[in-house]
Length: 174
Picture 1: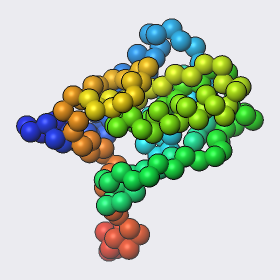
Picture 2 (picture 1 turned 180 degrees about the vertical axis):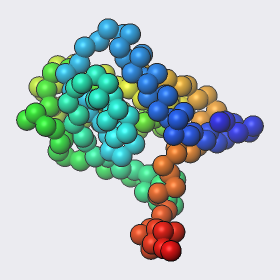
Picture 3 (picture 1 turned 60 degrees about the vertical axis):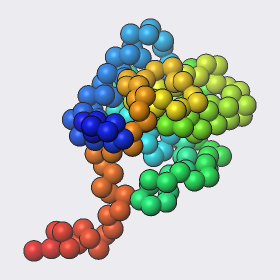
Picture 4 (picture 1 turned 30 degrees about the vertical axis):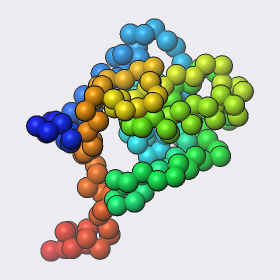
């Protein structure tokens, strides 16, 4: 649900999963056959996992991080892992790069460049996200929703960003 001022988008678990299914349909209808899904941790892990199951393709993981301050609401310096975790040796062939959104576009642009430069066995690389914001400098190959007002997206699992084990103990103590 987009707030009236267009500054916040609140997404339920059902909406989130429906959007991932719509992303799968877009990818499938494009006719592009890929070998591996590479998700960007953390935001791309949930969509990557679901797409991996739907397409029955191996899931590789590359860790990136830039939103660490203030419970994940402030973007800082982008860190990209040097290694990719994959169940089938090195990542190669046609690869679908998956993240949750193209926000500024900085992460996706940097990762695409790194993959093209450092991973020569990748023969073709495309990208898929749930949301693309209007201010993004990167245009993914596949996206479900374009958000011209650039709202902050409140994903259903964000509550865990500020939750600590002591709070869970308090919540679940009898």
